[in-house]
Amino acid sequence: MALALDRRNWDKIVCLLLVIFIFVLAPGAGAAAVFEHAETDFDTAAMTAAVMANLSAEDVATLQFMEDTGQALHEKITAAGGTPEQCKAAEVLFVLALFEKAHEPDFVDKLAGCFAANQTDEQLIAAVNAAFGTTLTAEEFSAIMTFMNNQIVEIAKSQLGNVGGQPYWSWYGFGSRVEWCACFVSWCADKCGYIDSGACPKFAGCTQGAQWFRNKGQWLAGSATPSSGMIIFFDWDLSGDFDHVGIVEKVENGRVYTIEGNSGDAVRSGSYPVGYSQIAGYGVLAL
Image 1: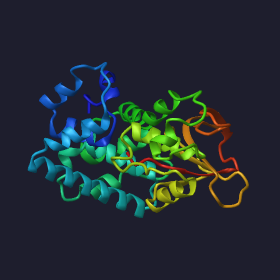
Image 2 (image 1 turned 90 degrees about the vertical axis):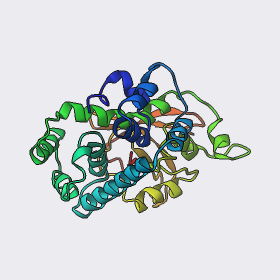
Image 3 (image 1 turned 135 degrees about the vertical axis):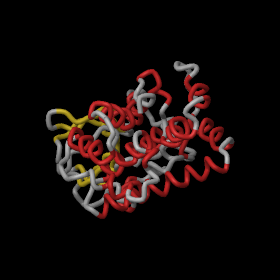
């Protein structure tokens, strides 16, 4: 987990697939090759394709095991009333801290049992350390979760001031301008590798996107307090339909701060009280 928490490497951890490969399957030479030029940007999709093309049969089996274990954790935590954020936290702990223990027959039950309602990071990590004999710290865990959530936020912030929605709607496949708030969110997610990894849908309609998150069990009510990086959906006329979508930048002092495409035909910041009536709900990215 120490390598993953080295701030010099954070800009390279752009999707869970690469995290899995670098920190679990290829902790030596593979990691060295990726991090050799820390300041160099790279194309996530191309990097992922290159990684997948060079996986051995044993590596593929390991990835399948990780996918199966992650799904089992999601189902166990959800069945116990856990939140999508807790499912994400469980997968992060599994991949980056507990992988060597994951073949124990009771691993899923033990890790899922560490989660409780209204739990702080300190309480969660204390429970994990007690269950697995680890020495993790809440500060390390909070740092990696904040980084993973903030990838889409940083992409969105870099687009502030764009007017007209180009390149977002054309990237989606439209030949001329459309209402582009959902295209903007999808474009940002794609830049992070989230669409290819299945963390977020590619959607051009707000209702389409919201329904995907609902169907996946990755949904929080509008009355909830969100986290940075969540997808915020609005219902302006309280009709039950979804009219607009954006990205949660942060939550401070009882307000939700957002970055939204097609806000007056531009990418702009916004802010709303937590629990604001026109916030219909939040999609949680399953990173």
